[in-house]
Length: 173
Image (cartoon, rainbow, N blue to C red; front, side):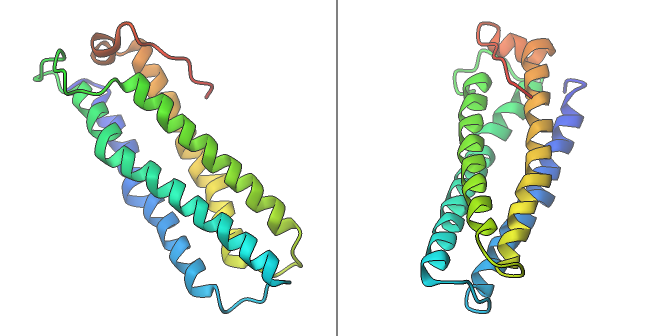
């Protein structure tokens, strides 16, 4: 395995074993707190929970996509025992562009949620506040770390260059 493989495995483990379960847990807390908190009006409540549901769906789509395709493809690139002409290996640059698109959708939903939350009285929707904080602080930071790592590997690591030598991408990290 390439020298970068271990650090990449570490980043993936952090996402899959720590961050993503924490976010999933927060979605569970929100659904169980749904009836416990008073939100100003049914319209505000409906709007908030529609946004939370959209965020949950987009997040689950991202994690499913990464677990099934992105992470295995990235790890496969580091395995020097495998022949990198394997047509079953997905193009990592294209996969990265798709995950960036999903991250942008998530960021837009978080922005919309922030706007909705700011319209509420202080002390309401506390679990949704925690979810927004989790995305704004932990998720964003870890995704920036992941995207920078992929960008660096695509342009500098021999394993990735062999796989993607005509498919370099620019990522604003």
